View 1: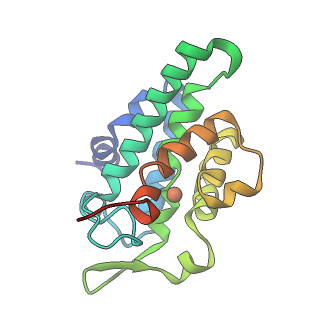
View 2: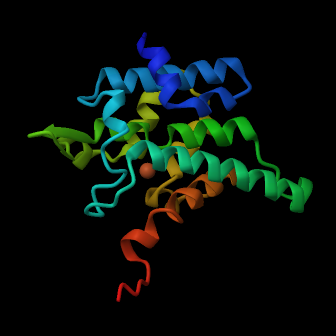
Length: 185
Ligand SMILES: [Fe+2]
């Protein structure tokens, strides 16, 4: 199996992107990230999606795919109830959600079989390295904007509708685990 075939197997949502050139740019960005990362596609099916929650039980890929599904489902409902009042470009949304964390492949190092934050990850968090990878592959600015602003760094700038939706899909399935109110007893 080629690395491209393996990528499409672990990332079936790439096929949701209608524009063929954008779809290709997304594939190229992920393949480039794997070339430069100590991680293999198989690792994404095993490593936790965050290093901030010990034993979180959710894999990297499970969370990344969840964000894409939530973002698209949100866009469908927003369109249904708000019509043209808040237009959302589906391809930009889906591509942005799929690429939001691609830079994390440069943020991890493997140490004794465990994943730890790399030196590069300490200097440059994944929104920055993700944009760098995507730009090398010709990803349009509207999609790079989603990558750049999907996390806390994006609170400093005006987000597009697509970026807001991806940000919230991502954070509503992350922050409750890290700092949500919980009653464990
Ligand atoms: Fe992220």
